[in-house]
Image (cartoon, rainbow, N blue to C red; front, side):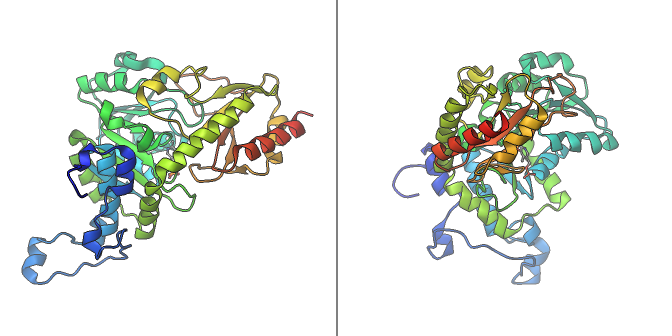
Length: 392
Ligand SMILES: *Cc1c(COP(=O)(O)O)cnc(C)c1O
């Protein structure tokens, strides 16, 4: 960066455009090269045996992975960043970097389903005790701490129920007992929420969603605080994780336009929800950026914006057949998992088996929507005709 603007003083949008790029290193080209590699050659045997050059072997990094890691390090204010080959891989690596046999981990009951699956099927075999907690506990989580609690996993909002949690309060109590605090921050992305700034040690992104942003690659990222970095770096190296350079590049490319995309997702979502709230077939909306939402105050305090993922319940008495008829009648909304791309999506919310600490009314039929970058009036028309068909 030229002039006297130091990088640390720049705003997030500016960092999204500039961080992790050094055109002077690559003959002036704006973007770094996509380095396809395994072997790295050394100039002589002395350099090889001492390992005294920047790159040693492509599994441990190359100029393309460095660029994305450096960008996120600056954006998230992290001591270091590691990439993973999916969001779930980022979650499992982050957890494994801070638990060992005999430890106890607390996981928010709202955690992403596959996070639960990892915790329930892998951790017990490593003799790590898993306990789920009510995300509304806040500092009250203290009562669940045991002498061997070493990690507290958080996520906000929950990606199916959109419940918020007071992560700064949880983090403060966790640090009193020396535990590592993890957060799945995929919903807001690092643009709208900066977890390391309020006490989170490992900030996790399913980069597959808003960072890649175009539904064309899988990616995970983990940004670590000073305290958590060393263990993450070692575990990541030991596990042999590596993300292919084309996918890393798609992540970098997506990052550059994250702010304009999220701004539009947020605006379109507000327009669509404002229409949905008045539809007779629709019950409660689920989106923490609505003043009517129980998580609104926390959202306003900890987040600087909202993304395109939201949900709603159908009115009481709606049948499963009606919910399915609604989904089947949609034409612009695709039916499919994942989200964060440019396109709108819908799925039925199925909570069976997904909660253990906090019971939830699973009779209420709910829908999760991802509001994409289409014209919101077209999305509203599509939702309207689908509601008409399902509730005729
Ligand atoms: C999709 C998702 C993940 C997992 O990401 P993948 O790249 O699909 O493995 C993790 N957390 C949340 C909240 C997600 O929505």
